[in-house]
Length: 328
Image (cartoon, rainbow, N blue to C red; front, side, top):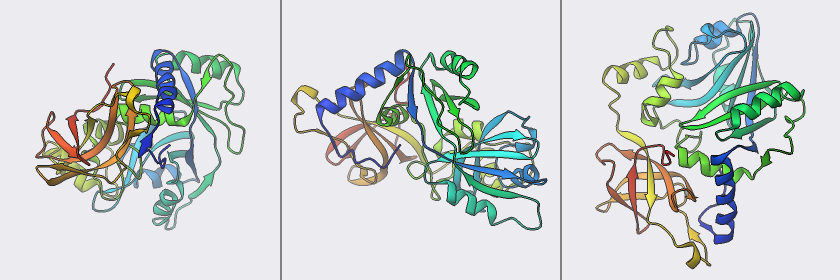
């Protein structure tokens, strides 16, 4: 979804995206959702992955899935993904686009005298988002043979279901009654909801607690036993989640679209965020939010900066907000 130059967006484009956001938030919309998928097989597949990731994979019944992390020994994030148990000795991992090979390489590093194979496979995904997504997905699964798995997802208050096709199979079919929208709309919704993405909010400089307690609750088991990077996660949790940075939203001073013929300026990822001339964060993702009527951004903000503070983003005022940016 990311990787799009949004340094300037014209008013007409914003209106088009706004229509898509409205359609999604009031009903349901579909999006082609590119995910990298790994298949882990072999007699030792579950036992091996159990010792590598933060979720309790051994506790998953066939057909269940969970969010999980794979960490460096120092506790920083190598990858954040969803893992599904599709058979007794088979797991499917889906991770943000562009992170499959890196995740596979990280996991293969510890393949020593075990019956485990990790393959990158082609699986197409369609994301449904909106309050009617669950009902729409149920109908699709019942009447659509191209959908193999339907996985509920909650983007911090925005309901959804991710539909997966078969390995090397076609994309799940979308009925005419559901509008297929530009993936740019999905990225706007992602940022409005404060949903982190690998390579933006999450990377090898990030520790899980910086993304928020909700991510820890969704992705970490404190009862499963040892896994790589566990020590730092447990230590921070025992100290009440006290970390140097927190993932926050930034709501920039609004823009009058009627006067924006030359485009709305959107801060690029990597833009410094200042308080009294001192850098306190950098922008990780940014969009124009039609729901809030202003440019917004995600940033890992220094813990000394309180929610409600006004920061400087390239000369524009920005208010620090808790996530999600949009709660309605």
